[in-house]
Image 1 (cartoon, one colour):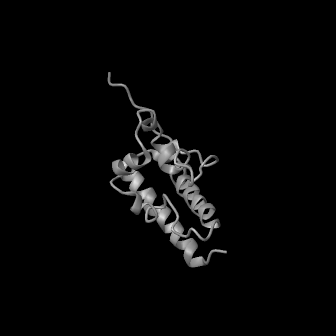
Image 2 (image 1 turned 60 degrees about the vertical axis):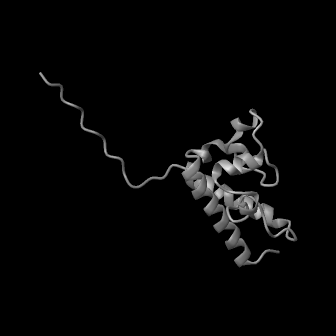
Image 3 (image 1 turned 90 degrees about the vertical axis):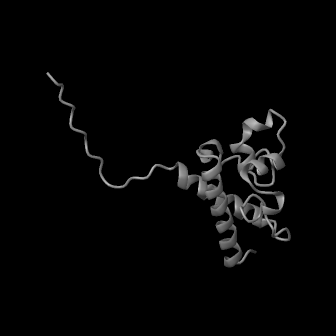
Length: 124
């Protein structure tokens, strides 16, 4: 079982990754299907799904990371991989953290009532 501190680290890593993706690949969250998200699978992880078009041109996962300005060694810091390999449930916890990052970016928020606009008057 993961500790609260480990869960918090995974959530923070996904948040870091979300911020990186916001900067480098705006709109990324809309291209990721949270139902098929699989952090262990390079085609179904956040990077794989959000940069899917690159796959068809022979761009490898490492090349995609390079386009984000990171290396394989950086992936745990950004939530693209898990450093807790002796905790298999860490992958699921990380995926859940990413699903929250996706929801935060794709779920419409309401910030009060929407006022109707005044109709424009035509100049005569």
